[in-house]
Each structure stands twice: as C-alpha cells, then as structure tokens.
Image (cartoon, rainbow, N blue to C red):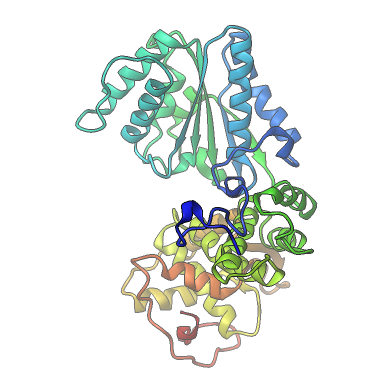
Length: 427
C-alpha cells in the first residue's frame, strides 16, 4: 500500500506513476544532453546572436517551422548560453521571453518586457500594470537597459499573433535612435512562413533579419527525445514498446516533439486515473487521440472562421465520399453549402485556396499538385493528415462554430461533392 502524505489518507506521499513530471511540461527547457537532433539548428541560431557574447551587435533572426520542431526550445537554450558566455566576458547580457499568443498587443508585450527586466535587476521605479500607454513601458525598458545591461536578447514567440509589428522597429532602431546604448538582438518565432509578407516595408527594412527554417523530427529523433524523458516516470512504470509506439504515432502524424511528449504525459494521467500500475500501449493510443484533437485546435486557434469551415468541408467530403483526396473546387462547393447553412458569406475560391495552403504549411492537410489530362490541366488535391473526426471535434470547439448544423446525406454526383451530409455522429 502506498504511504500517505503527512498521515492524511487523502494524499499519497509518492505519485504512483510520475517521478519528475516537470520533464513533460511544455515550457521545460532540458539540459543540453537531453536536446536531440538539433545540432545544426543550435549552431545556426548561435551564429546569428553570438556576436553579443563579444560585445558586438547581434543579428536579428526569424525562425520558421511547424509546431513542435524545437523553435522555442533552441531559441531559449542558445540565448541562455549566450548570456552565460557574455557574463564570462564581463558583458552584461539579459534574456527576455514573450509569448505573443498571450501578450498579443504592443502594450502587453512591452509591459511584459519592462516587468521582466525589472525582476532581473534592482530597478527601483514602479512600473504600473495598467492605466499607462505603450510609450511609458518603452521608457522603462530603455532606462533599465541603459542602467544595467550592455546587451539583451529578446525572444518573441508566436510573433505572428501580435496585432501589429511596431515593436520590431522600436527594438531594432533603439540604439540608432539613441534610446539606449545597449545592443538588442531579436529572435522572432512563427509557425507561418508568410509572416514576413505581412510586415510593413519600413519595418521589414529596419528589422533586417535573417531567416531560419526548422524541419519536423523523424521517428528515430522522436524515440531519442522520448527516451530522454523516461525518468519523468517511476521506475518500470512504462511498459515495453510504449516509447516506440509514442514516437511512431507522432512521426507518422506530424513529427511534433511537443505533441509526442504530450501523448506520453496524457498516457501517464490516464494510467493514474484508472489506477493502473503501468503505462501501456492502450494508454498511448487513447492519449494520442486526445492529443491530436488538442493539436488541431492549437494549430487552428489563430485561423479565420473560413479556414476552419474549409477544414470542416474537407472532413465532410472524406466522411461521406469514397476518396481521401479532393480538388479545391470540390471542397469549395461543400464549403459554400456550409456557409449558406450558417448564414455566412463565403470567400472566393481563390481565397479558400490560400486558406488551404496555410493549413498545408501548418501540417493539418497535405496538398499535392497533379495533372488531370489535356482536358482538365493541372490542379491540387487535398487530404487530411488526421482522422476527420478530430477535425470536426476541434472545429466545433470554436464558440462561434459549435452550433454547426448536421447535414442530411444526399447522393454525390460524379463531378461534385455538393450535397448535405450527416455529420452528427461525429460530434
């Protein structure tokens, strides 16, 4: 029988499943020997910001890649090592991290930067958390940098979630505008490779950044990443084959290390909730479905309602049809039907194509260009990389779309998927 904590029978002194659960936390930055398959990426990021360790100006850099490819992890790892190396050279260097999915306005982001700088130093001025404008937060940032730092690395994670990009100009031009003598290096992180196209030309020119691309992990790398998290569990709790299955499922779906770790964590939670003594392959498979729905919801969280309706349309085509792939035109016809039922004006077919293209970059769908012969020319075929049920559940988690109506199935014509279909069983 498990020993109870402090004599209280309600609580156990030792978790029967987890030993070091923090190793499975999303924000955990592991030791260098636990980082797998990212040696080249570490070197590339270090090459851009490394000048800061010698008292020279660093380059700004934008890192692109799908979710779970190590962008945030490597950025924080390299920035921390750069700070330590600078300190060894008696150069005062700071590291600041902002999650722009939460601090999604310039005011919120600058407030977080100012408060973080104040926490790292002996800054004695009060920084209000509300009731002041963005420029006052900038003034605190410049004052702290001028007093305490020679340089600073600012990591802006999910930078595409910011409502405007003015912060990039302010940070990149601060020294030139004599706001501070400290060097500021910015690492921007985005899942959207098109982010640069959204920048104002003046800001893009001022930022002057280099671009790096992180590719998904393969199955072997994911296995090694999972093995490096084994001590998150109690000894002998993970059954044989669970690590390999977890890595294989993640590699097959998306190569997302974050989600592979989430699957492993969720499997442990399932084992604990069912009073199991070990984590089995059954727990891994159950956890994978939960994690996949969460992954789709996360990837589509910043997408427009029309992008989600496009995914819903593709899912409905697959559920009711006899194929796994559909043309843009076919998806558009189903999408237009859905828009009519939810009283929403559809975007153009070209607009839908752009929405599908972005979802392909994020790894929600795959798009392949093919030829239809002399009469049809070339066209794109789209397929989901996950179970249509996961798409339907994830889309319906959007408050504005949770009441998507069911469809009455009609026979599809030869050249069209048009026809209302019953998706109520996938709710």
